[in-house]
Image (cartoon, rainbow, N blue to C red; front, side, top):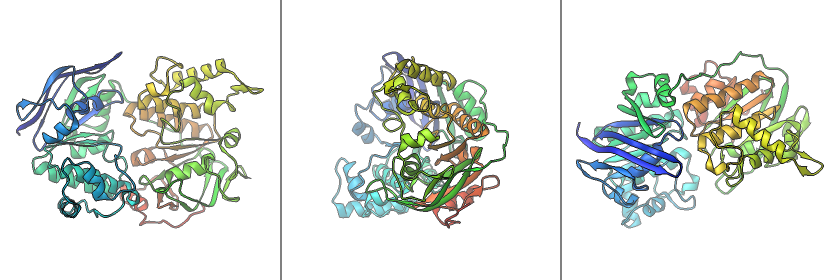
Length: 504
């Protein structure tokens, strides 16, 4: 195959850290090339250099044999490089066509652009109406907007960052068909994902980064997911295990839980019901935007609900706010770690105080015990292997994976009766994800009840005793997780299978 992009000895350093250290790799035209590594391994910095967002300190890039040094993303796009980011950059109040026009240098008139959008979306199996308002689209449809925006530029290299994290299994199949079609037409794809089985199914080659350096390459189809994970972490990967404790008494009961959307583009909850028992893990799957945030808010107390909808140990807690629920033993960790679960510019000690004050006795007679808070933060850092200079570091200074370990650890160490977590391993590498899942399983073994809301089906099948799916604010009947196959789960997530309200 003809080499499209070559990186030779790329190095990029920031104060106190070398993000990329003499990185070299090549991508051929039509090749699907995986870029693997733990959080902080240097993947983001590398693709930012390719896309013109960051300038390398040393080394060079070649595009089709000629020097390639984009000063900004506009220059990268002009050279044939497109990028679909993990977090969408779309305006909810605008239409699909208007959003796409904003990302184009010389956008055609709206009628001509709409025609091109329809043509490209049909050609690549990504049906999308240019007139629809983005705020009304599902997460999978929003991703199509980002992809089509790139495809209209006719890229020679398409960079994709965690592209399947918000998709159902059926949507993943559609995306892979599209990527294979692009590959067959000669478009190279640089693919970043923590889902190693997907890498094995899709990618022709993989480069593994660790500590900013290239530590290996492999052919994914000839390498197991475990082998790739261990190359990424440089150690034997511990697989989460559990003893299979029999669930006990009901501790949490939802009866006809209904609540409004949290914002104009949110999703109202509709007649949700289930029982949760001690020692049990209930996995709740669903494509992003189907009521996950609202469900966590209703359970945590950030959003109060009408009487008779939420019962904790036989007590109606629908009107209680988060602090009161925490005092009873119902704790929660939201999806957005930086800004919701943790205050970016507060230290880890201060962030430990925010949710741990009552249950860890960090406050007495109206006075905050900062020494006790510091000890609590240190205990979290030690037990959950949070890589940080210490409890005085700000939340913002931690990598995503390390902050996630801190956030989950902070709640687990408060010994909850019920813990609700949303996306517990979002954007977290294999080693950190395994540690977090093990902590949740250990908590259940100790008698707590755990609700895991996640878009990662592998995660849900690994930790759950029972499974249910959210679709348009409704919850399916719960099913034993053991024996469920991907097709059934995909149907439940898509709202076409067993979406009746259940009171188990």
